[in-house]
Image (cartoon, rainbow, N blue to C red; front, side, top):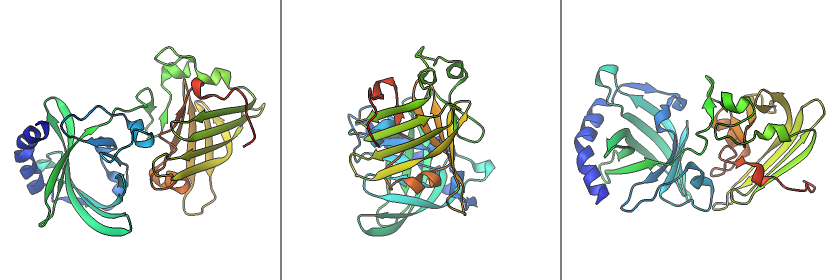
Amino acid sequence: MFRQKSCAITAAGLVAAISTVAASTIADAAKLPERFKGVWQFVEQGSKACRASDWQSERHNDALSKIESARIHHHESECRFTTISLPKSQFDSGAIHVAMTCEGEGEQWKRTEIWQILSVKGEDLLSKTTISRQMPSTGLYQKCADDTAMTGKTGSGKQVATATEAAGTSSSGKTDLRSTLGPGRHCFASKEDGADFYLDIDKAGSASFSIDVVNQNTRHLCAAGGAAKPTDHGWSYIDTSQSDQTCRLDIAVSDRVRFRFDNDACERRYCGARASITTVEFSERNRRKACGPR
């Protein structure tokens, strides 16, 4: 019932979007507007609320997709953006034209879609219309709640702790983990995320770390580690092992430990296609009482 009403409401908007989206093409797919990024769930009758962490947990299902700067992940496939076209300012409907190359289960194909955020019954939904003579279609997706809503963004796009967290207490009143992370080894584990994190802090405040993540559904792996320098919000690791690109991993500490890369390409250096470090968080309840060998 919900899907039928939604499609009727959006039909006129989609026609307008398709007719006006032919404008300036952006070769750099990293220009994808921020409003489209995140974890989305296909809208079906009786759809339940979802959270971004569902993508990396036992709640992962084939109704979910994850949109990043340069690609979109589906349950058993992945598409990389080749071009993103925005409408001219005088015709801007908020829609974009996305051309992609896709692969999955041993096959490769191309896909072109119109994406637009539409308000339906007071809720913002992502409408994706496939441009195809043989199989045209439209799907509606609801955005999964952001698990990192307590963090802010700097101008460079990296997420860090908010001012209240920097003062030693998070906005929820929880104790800042940094006050408990003194010199020595600290170990965290999350069974839900299939993740283990080791942090060895020296007396000067620098640290060596390692993090390993196993996607419980796909068995894809992530692994990163090295020497990290202290920052105002935790530690920062700089990877210069590849001459074509330097990657930075920030370990941000507030009431939780979170991980942020400069961009998606850097995370892919350490992770399989459907595994992620940046979706993993550790809190005090994830701390191991005793640290065994790595």
